[in-house]
Amino acid sequence: MSYAKRYAPDPNFVALRLSLKTGLDHSRLEKGALSRQELRILYKAVADLLGRERLPIAMPV
Amino acid sequence: MLEHLHLDRDRKLISLFGEPVIFHCHHYNLFLQQTIEDPDWIDGVGILRTAAQEIFYSLLYGAFKALGIQETQERLAVAAQIFSFLGFGRLAFEVTPSGGEVQLTHSHYAEGWLSKYGDQVNRTRPIDHLAVGYVAAALDATFGELGSYGAEETECMAVTRKDHCVIQATRLPRPQLLTPSPGMGKLIEQPLQFPRPTTAVDYDAVNEALWGLPLAGDERGQIRAFNVLLTRMPANYCNRIQYRFLQELKAVRAELMGVGEALIRESGHVCVFYTFGNIMESVEWETLVGPMLEKDTDWIHGGYAVASSLGWGRWQALEVVSGESCRVAIDGNYEANYFLASYPRAEDPACYFAQGAVPAIMNLVYNGNIQQKPVLDQVFYNRLFQRGGLFHGQETKAREKGDPWCEFYAARVSGTESLRM
Image (cartoon, rainbow over all chains, first blue to last red; front, top):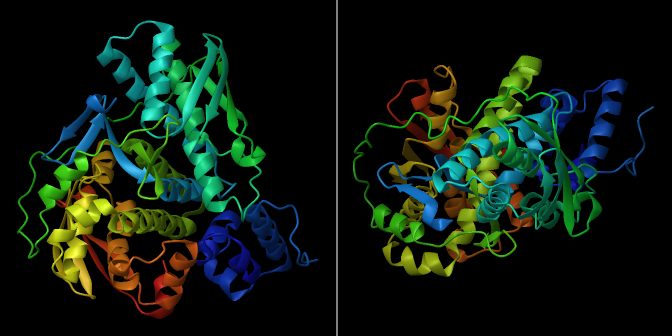
């Protein structure tokens, strides 16, 4: 989420956008209380938001 | 085309061939579209294209009828002319009754997106969903009936970074069942008389001056004014995409309705912040409204007087408390006109654009210090949210729920509360 807020456009709305993209509750996204599977979904959504295939941060395993 | 615009002075609405048209800038158009495109578990692109095909079919059908145009090439030329007049770019049709290719240059969405996000984001999917729907509508209205054609953007300059986009159109084996526009919608019968606010701003004088500006697409088919890319957007396109999107969201993931609504409100906020901010820093504002600005609250009235000049309905600030709050009535808001013609009575207030737009004027004046003419860029806008004390709006009376008019109240919320839905 920190990466998304730093590099994605409209940083004040990035959590809401990611909530809509991932279907995950936005307060859970903000708190970082996510399962490994949800983290993977979030990673993909952030990459998609920036139009990249991969992000220069580790993909959750 | 300017001569074909119809101005309803009493209701402060503008129409073109029977369709209400409103001014919106690329900040609004892009943010709203992005919100609808974001969840890939909804067919957002389908919502955008279909709505464009339906609404523009109604507009073009009305245009061909009003202008008495029968001939194919003339119909296509008028369709291209209207597209440019509205500020969406330029279309070059190479089509027959079975379909064909259309080249789009100076696309409002693609150029707007490149200027706003192009340095930060690498777009991988085409962006011109409105133009795709428009092309299908133009062929429907020229050769067939609503829903006869389908279209697809095969090259998009927001993706390729070239100077043009390409749209392919084909005649479908069977017309799709689509819904035409409700036109002007459910209009107010008679404008209400609100108490005159205490201000030196003459709303009617501001309206007349702005209505007199010859804002139309230039040789590129763009309306470059007040430092933004403007469009004369068919109001029912905005209405249809926002309400269908929320309906879909409710059906699939009802728990995310609040998120969708908050993002649509933000499209209204960002729109007003940039467009009105730039208007308030313009020579036109200084010349026209400047002499009426005696107190800070007059800046708020000036802002709402501008809002009531853009085809959005009759906006009137009823009360402005300096630095604290404002109460604004909208009589015959374009969102409510559409809603009441398309759905049963609303359970909750549903004028989302206005819910975001009303507090944006307060934020411009009391948080953005627009009187000091700051540089209105992304950095400035982002900082506004980090400072806290933002104004938020609530729709306290809703015509779509049965009240005689819509009313909004904007007041400050504290600290991080400003980011809540």
